[in-house]
Amino acid sequence: MFAPEDLSCDDFIGGALRIYQPRFGYRAAMDPVLLAAACGAQAGESVLELGCGAGVASLCLGRRVAGLDLHGLELQPVYADLARRNAQANDLELTVHEGDLEQMPAALRQMSFDHVIANPPYFAPQNGTAARDAGRETAQREATPLSEWIRQGLKRLKPSGHLVLIQNADRLDDILCALHGRSGAIRILPIAARQGRDAGRVIVISRKGAKTPLKLLAPLILHARAHHTGDAEDLSEVAQSILRMGQKLPI
Image (cartoon, rainbow, N blue to C red; front, side, top):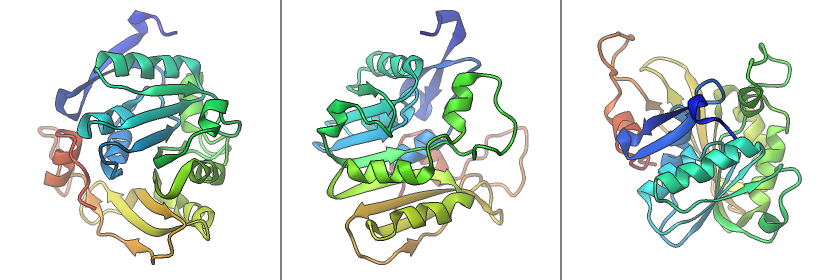
């Protein structure tokens, strides 16, 4: 477990959530908030987050939609403990399972879900410099192939259930290959920092077993101004509604 002095307590969605995170380990930013905003879960439905970390995405979703049966799978015990602590601190129900998605815990193997969400590690095994913190390195660098994240996510879905992923834009071809023949009605949302910039992230939503054609959606632009300035956050109106008010993405 993390010592109290090694943790910070940070606001998410405008302070509607207070999340404990390691000061120097893996720290969630906007990606899990965007992931939660892309999930169309409704009251009474079940959701599994693969690689839930400290629980940010699941808890953002739980704050927006009451009455969900929320579950998370986390490889690192210290982060699983944080997710449980964060759920309790925010008066939300989240069942956190510890284990490797390639060797799914027995309890999860007996369950199926309406929605599976995931923010898989972005960095390929040999790309870039390893993080100094082991927990951050595990969270950010791919050890289990992205295709396996998708395969295991689909296995845990009910028929016609939805898989929601956020990932680097340059991994889109890998995602589509892994989904081919297994999941359809695919919607792709490019995410760009500013108007005219290339997308750095994509959100991909698919429905298990569907055959409906793919849709490439208009991009989500995060910042309203053409260039960064130090005097204001300058989030776009849509980004404000998601990141500061916890609203659903309009997709």
